[in-house]
Each structure stands twice: as structure tokens, then as C-alpha cells.
Amino acid sequence: SKEQISHDEYQQTADWLMSQTKHRPQVAIICGSGLGMLADTLKCQDSFPYSDIPGFPQSTVKGHAGRLVFGELKGKTCVCMQGRFHMYEGHSLCKTTFPVRVFKLLGVETLIVTNAAGSLADGLQPGDIMIIKDHVNFPGLVGLNPLSGPNDEKFGPRFPAMSGCYDKGLRCLAKEIAKQLGVAGLMHEGVYAMVGGPTFETIAEARLLHRLGVDAVGMSTAPEVVMATHCGLRVFGLSLITNKVVKSYEDSDSVNHDSVLEVGRLRSQTVQQLVTELISRMEINNNNT
Ligand SMILES: Nc1nc2ncn(CCNC(CO)CO)c2c(=O)[nH]1
Image: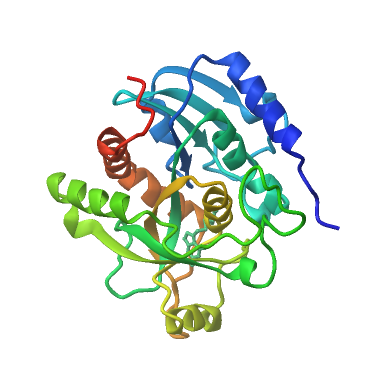
């Protein structure tokens, strides 16, 4: 039967963290493969290895450090996951999304998710950045959903609406910032598809995804966004395009994780600037500067 996590477990982790740091974050950031350096820019940091945090799973993927970092960024208090959890690591979906509900209990109102993704769209090249307009959650479509099982009404409704879950205001702001940073040429908006992984897609799967109108593909993000939408967090997502998905049987190229991390290192500066500016300029309700 599906593993259930009780409300108390989420609360115990939130209480433990609140006893360890004075920071009360308004924004949470989940850093994707090779994008963890964003956490290093937080000021007045308090950081905790996942192994110290009650209830947290462990990160097992190269390029995912495994630290929760609290700090200030442009006058806003943030909490940043250096390393995220993926379904393909064998975590249950409620474990991979455990931090999102903890962030909610800490008072976070906005979640920013970043990931590395492969591009299916002709106009999306490695090194480009895709603002996520919407997602296709393939595991979710077959019932692998973190919300399946008894609903916790304290977090949200039994049947949450998912249309428009990627906040339009933040997407517009991100495009504005990209222009001002002079990186609008790198920026695109598109649909992200989550596949379970850990295998990269076959050519037939890549062609199917492309035919379905998916622009970028990855192995994360959708479950976290489902959980965040359920409990009322505002969501912004971006994909760093690290490679072109192989769609032709003639193409001898094949993707590997190291090349994914390499592009992450190359473009991390730009992703960092974008997310930092976005956090600095986004409206926050309880802005306790
Ligand atoms: N074809 C393809 N290219 C990709 N580049 C990055 N990712 C995201 C998955 N990242 C994994 C492996 O690098 C680590 O989480 C993918 C993917 O899922 N498929």
C-alpha cells in the first residue's frame, strides 16, 4: 500500500528546523542537477545536511549536494534545497516531495523549481533556459501522484485544480528580467514533461513526446509542483536545457549525466542571476524586511 506521511511528521520537521534557525523563509528554491551553487549566494546562511534533518530522505545523485540552506537574498528570506529527490532514486513520491509541505509549514509562499532538461523543440538549444509554462506529468497520469491516498484537508482540497499552476505574473517578470539582463535570446517558454527515469528516453519515446507537443523532458519537478499547488504555494519553474534529445535513428549522439552537469556549470551563472533578480523583484505578502 502507498506510504503515508502524517501531518505531525511534517510539523515535527518544520518545528525542528525552526528551533535550529532564526530564518523564517518566504521563498523556497529547489536546485536542479548542477544548479546547487545558487544556495551559496545566500547571506547569513544556516545550512543543514539532509542527514541531520528528521524525515528528510538522502540525495544519491552526482550533482546534488544534499544540504538545506537558509539565508537572505536581496532582502528576502529564502530556503534552498541543494540537491533534490527523484522518483528514480527509489524514493516514494511523498518522500520526494516531503520538503514542499515542510516549506509550507515554515511560512513559505512561493516555490521556485529549477531542473536540467533535454530539449525536444527545434528552437531550444543546449545552454538555453526554458521558463516552464505548463507540465505533462506522465507518472501522475498513471496514478503515481504524491497526493494519492487519503487527503490531508489541512494542506489542501481532495481534487486540486492544476490549470495555471505556473504563476503567470512570475513568468512575465522573468521574461522582463531576461531582457534587462541581456539574455532574452536564451530564454524560451514551453511545456516540460516528467518521465520516471532513470533511463533516458528511447528514440521512439522521444518522438512520441515531441509529437505530443512537449518542449523539454526531465525526471523531476512535476511531483513537487503538484504538492506545492495543492497547499497553495505560488510556483515558478525553469529548465536549463543541457542537451538535445535524440529523435533520429541516424543520430549517433547519446546523452549522459556528465554532459548534463557540464552545461549546468556553464550556465549556472545566468540561472543564478535570473533567479536572484526574480526573488528580489517579486511581490511578497508578509515582506518582513
Ligand atoms: N533526453 C534527456 N535529456 C536530459 N537532460 C537532462 N535530463 C533530466 C534528467 N536528469 C537526470 C540525468 O541527468 C538526473 O536527474 C534529461 C532527460 O530526462 N532526458
